Image (tube, rainbow, N blue to C red; front, top):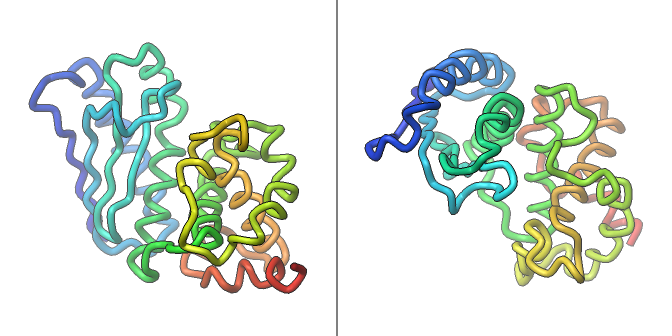
Length: 217
């Protein structure tokens, strides 16, 4: 396993966090990577407010099986706390995506998005020990079956609004992070039924996870 970490900070925006970032990467990359079949990976950390959760000042994106970004907002007042408390979860989430993307193409349908995000969210909790990813509201997570039922007509469609389902674009119609909550619950049921962890199921076909949902509809 070859994982290289890069802190991109030509502007110096992250200078006050550099040592903590180095420690976090040193402590967590090998721990998380050791649970996934990652052969090679570049991890880039950069000041990029547009890619972050606005409340937390941290976010991430997996681009392929060999590249992920951790985005930070150096001006967010919650960044220090988020680095200390959220960094392992964000890193785990994106590393799980990378492991999956190395084997399976990116998700196209709404149902496939539920699965890939649900797997990554479940993996987060395997790393952090929390019952639910911290960014998913407990009430939304508890109602995931109702939201899943509402998605059935377009579950296999590629014509859906990702930002509405996953990022709260229209909160009056759908709570923020609903798609992540659906995926977390849906995948959780699958893992429990098959006695698997999210780490073990990184490459499970989305159709397998969605099979019971499709049959029951």
